[in-house]
Image (cartoon, rainbow, N blue to C red; front, side, top):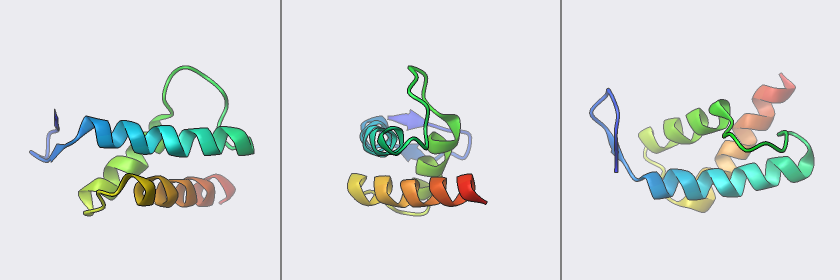
Length: 74
């Protein structure tokens, strides 16, 4: 479990799983460079979605992909 400044508790495994799904897709489409370190923007999007109440890793990944792509194209 991860404890942040807002006293929210989130499951690190959930963030990790959703990030892996989203990052793999975004790398395949060329929207995310292939690198070892996590993309901070993508992690932030996933954490925001969890704070809004989304806890399904596939929905998290899909929403994060959409938000990342919208921000990237804006």
